Length: 213
Image (cartoon, rainbow, N blue to C red; front, side, top):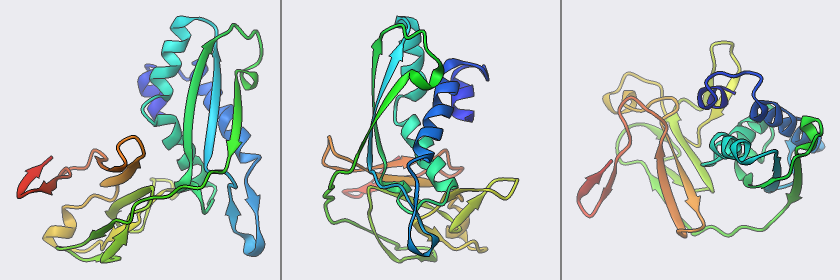
């Protein structure tokens, strides 16, 4: 919840944090265990309707949950629960001003949907450094970093990279952070967008012979 605490000035009892916890519990109830012990979340889209008590609270929720932050949080929640399909989850949020006078788990409604998605064929090709796979087909979200699994200081899994640079003493590979960047498909643009994940050396895209950061 660090992203929420930063936005809300570390108010650990702030309403968005309480609601986010209840959202996680709600989707946890929908996780299924299938043959072989694999875990799946049989939906790829959530439509979340949040009820706000007043315009100020609505503004707070939009700041806390907007810009795909809640989507990323819920994806990471599924990842921590070892759910195979966590990368495919899309989250759409709408808010209304409607004083609920109800407990936090009644502050929202979730519609669970499974929609077929068609992505354009696109591949990342590794030109320098040592990485697997050398040709990485782009998914809806493709994560790039050094080492396949990234653990926190308690040994808990926080991220799996799709394009994995080897953790070795090489100038190119050492310039890639463990959590370096991601490539995400944007349906509105009908194309892929590159996001740097606050990496030390940054992420640049070469287009038409020009380097764009």
